[in-house]
Each structure stands twice: as structure tokens, then as C-alpha cells.
Length: 447
Image 1: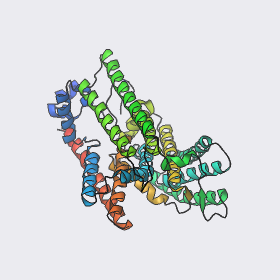
Image 2 (image 1 turned 60 degrees about the horizontal axis):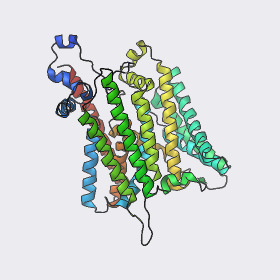
Image 3 (image 1 turned 120 degrees about the horizontal axis):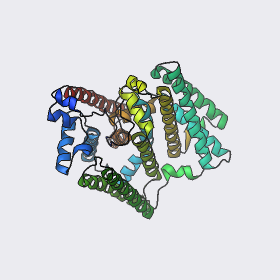
Image 4 (image 1 turned 120 degrees about the vertical axis):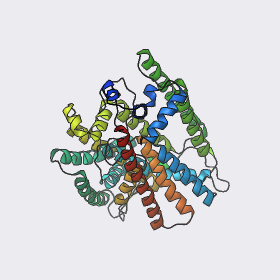
């Protein structure tokens, strides 16, 4: 497990290997030492950083690299097949369509990191969305209605976490029961909230409609992007300076500048796409959708929680080796319950995004399929089904992969069954990469 000290910037996502004199005495090769160490901790230059990073990739620690290359390859394929794919209108449409899949994937990361799974988060999130819409219809302020929906889903998932930890029941069975119960609860809540409405509760006209249907002004998009890049740059530079002041390892300044530049390029690309006119005829429609900001805030918040807090270190430790974490004094039950609560809260955000996209919540909500999309997004993004490895940014990229597949196949005129089958192929490929990475990592550590 990772230590509770703040003297290592080894990124979570795999077991942290500490190179000791004993290991060297046992005959560990230089290549094995490099493969088991973080480039940030041992590299003094961009060239050395690249060399250590390549060693880690060859040893199986590829991180989000496969999903990035896979996403690029899929985008190129669909652009070749349909010139409309990379149009501003279609890309913005893709982002809004994939938003709820991305957030479901982020929800699943919390429990998958522990080696668990939550099959109920789809219907649980939908129930949270219904609670929010119900409160809005009663005149409750939108922010209080959102808190009510998040609290409901958090409590629902927390109860499942209690059953799993205290009674030592398999999460698969408990959350499968929760999924069936969640479907019934969804139907009952809609009937109570909107009787005689044909199984649908509409979203009242308020700020929540703008999550999917609205957009920032072009100027606001640039301001938000610049502020985000500046804050990221300040954080990175300050962190490195603080580490060097305390005589701790820090990445080369060239690597930090490169990371900031990559974020700036990505931000500029998103704003340029969003600010392109995608209106039809004389209509002018510009601006980055608000849902992009929602996902960005969620990504930053959950990444800090997992990567920079004691809770996050404990989550990775439990997923890597629960018995070792327990012997180190970690309260396994508490961490697991909190992880399920966070999964439920994030699922409720997905439900609200879905309601914003369709203008309400219906009893036809396919929570069983959407939760599988969430699991697929997390796994495609590099989160291990066996626990201990994964990152929130991976779930975002994995959700985009799923969204790109569906969007691209729709442009090409493929049917829904074909879309599901191609998603299944990509998911199987991702699981295969995960298994091979673990096998390669294990073999490298034993050389």
C-alpha cells in the first residue's frame, strides 16, 4: 500500500514499488529498477524522464496510453468514413451525448478501485434525478433540489455499502438486488411525483435545463479555459518548488512545462470547437456547453480526492492488498462505505445530466444498460476490475470512447445492435490489455 507520508508524488494507479538496497542485493537489474519507479521521482531531464516512462510502458504500466491511442484511431476511422464526424456541430453533440456515460464511469471508479462493483448506480442515479425534479416542481430552489437528489442516491448506495461490509456479502449480488429494487423505486417515485403523467416527470424551466441545453458565451469560454490553465500551472509549479525546497524529488521543469502546454492545447481546442457556429440556417449557436464545465469540476474534485488525500491513498491500498491495508490500521469497512456513497452521489449527477438532456425523467430509463456503459467507460479508461489501479481521467476518456463509437456508428447508419456489439468488442479489448499489463508487470518485478 502507499504510505501516509506526503513525500511521494507517485501517481496512484498501481502498486508503488520502493527500490531498496535489499532489492539490489537480490540482483534486481537496472531495467527492473527503472520500470518500477516513477519518472517524476528519479528523472533529472526530459530525456531521462522519457526513457524511464518508456521502460514502465514496456513493463506493463501503460496508464491511459492505450485508451488515448484507441480514441485517436477511432476518431480517424470515423472521420475517413464520414466527413461530418469532426464538424463542430457533431463534436459538441457528441460531448453532450457522452456526458452522462462519462459521469457514470467516474462513479464506478470509486468501487472498482476497491475490487468491488455497483450494478445499481444506473437506477439509483435516476432516482436521484427524480427526487431533484420532484423538489423543483414543489418550488424548492434548484441548488437545494440538487442536494436532495445527491443525498438520496448517496444514502441508497451507502446502505448497500453497509450490507456489503458488515454482512460480508458480495457486492455483485447486493448491487444487483439494488438495481432491481431501484427500478421499482424509480417507477414508484415517478408515479408519486407526477401522477397521471404517463410515467414521465418533466424538468421545470430553470438553470438545470442549461446543463445540456445551454452554453457559455464565447468570451466566458475563453475566460474559464485561461483560468483553468493558469490555476493548473500555478499548482504544478508551486508543488515542484515546495518539494525541491524540502529536498524531495520533483519532475524536471521541462516535463512540468510540457504538461501545462498539453492542457493549454486541449483547452484551446475545446473552446474553439464550442465557439464555432453550429446553428442551422440563419441561427447562430455558439459557446462551450455548460456540461463541459460540470465534468471538469467533477474531474478535478474527484482526482484531488483520490490522489491527494488520505482517503484516496487508503482506497488504492485496499484495492491493491486489503489484508496489508487492514494490518496497517486502515478501517476497511469505513472506506468501502464512503466509496459506495461517492459512487451513488456521482450517479445522481449522471441522472440530473440525463434529465437535463431529455427535459425530464421517464420510467423507460434503461438503468441496467447505462450502468454497464459506466463500467465499460471505467475499464476502457484503464481502471482494473481487480482493484488498485485506475484514474478519473481514464474514465473520462473511456466514456468518450463509448460516446464516439455510438455517435460515429449513428452517422454511418448502423443499427443499435451493431453499436452495442462494437462497444462490446472495445470493452473486451480493454480488459485484455488490463490482463496483459498485469501479467507483464508481474513478470518484470520478478526478473
